[in-house]
Length: 228
Image 1 (cartoon, rainbow, N blue to C red):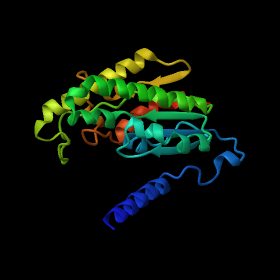
Image 2 (image 1 turned 120 degrees about the horizontal axis):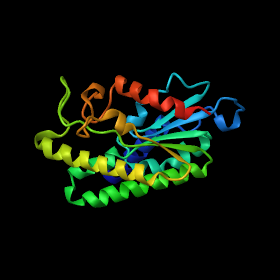
Image 3 (image 1 turned 180 degrees about the horizontal axis):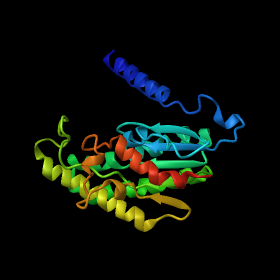
């Protein structure tokens, strides 16, 4: 009986996630429209990303899911991208992969390589749908709690934060250097970080997420890249 209950709980959880991130509720692919579809895809940072006001007329859709690693983003591509027929997909993912270093710091090189590989697979699969990919570098992290917030990093704050920051910097450098063909690299990190590679406090909601000013800064630079 306990096993049955646990299976039922897992089934309900999956069902709720599917409902919350439902693919094509209004059947966009079957409705003629002159407005191009632009899709934001990724983790909670993508989920909180508002549509640029300077771009239009477009249909903006968001398929960001909190706590998703790049692997989980890749797994849901078949239901969250292709059925929506987007012309452009903006990808922001990878921070939750880097957070795994908090549990396994000895896997630094492995986590970096696996994240890069998964991001490449995401790009390849999105391009296979016919959409143009705007691949964002991973937003930087903060090294100290914002006033009124609790520290994410805990008692080992300096070391833990440094490990994640270094991984983010390395992945971003590799993404910019690789610059896959027919893919636009949007260097969000460069716009948000300070001279030391940390998230600028002016753009920080907390140590992992950016505030409205941060998204405004990004959208000022992103808008021209989304003109179709």
